[in-house]
Amino acid sequence: MKRDLQVRNGNYDLFDVFDDFFKPMFFEETKELRTDIKENETSYELDLELPGYAKDEIKVSLENGYLTVSAEKQKKEDDGKKYLRREIHESTSRSYYVGTDIEQSEIKAKYDNGILSLTVPKAQPKKLPEKNFIAIE
Image 1 (cartoon, rainbow, N blue to C red):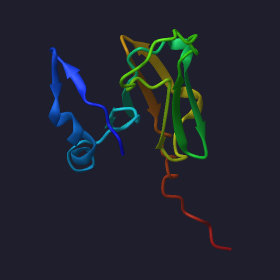
Image 2: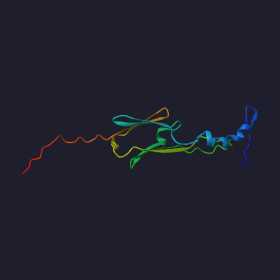
Image 3: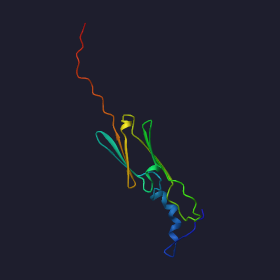
Image 4: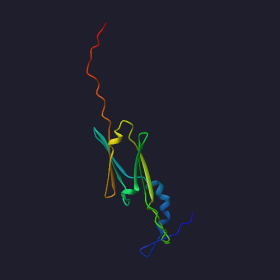
């Protein structure tokens, strides 16, 4: 694989040639959404990092117990510039299994300063009837 040397601070960066060699061992380059997940007695709470996306570029769906968050940037026109490296992704998506014992109609979503906060309420357990005596005939 041919790789051009990068110029940094006016000097050629000779070690940049080894970036791809060490990356699989030490770095995880991923487009996945970084997420914090908390659980309490009544709900699951998810905080997802989505910096740079507008609220209308984000979609949240629930199907078969999987909560899916996807975001896609509006396509920009080609500016004609030559990129040396592109790390900003135009779309991302991730699914989370929340099960089927949740209150789907009560899921809440809030987007503020690049953080999408989701609250997924758990279904309330059905109360067992109190002890009943059955008459014997």
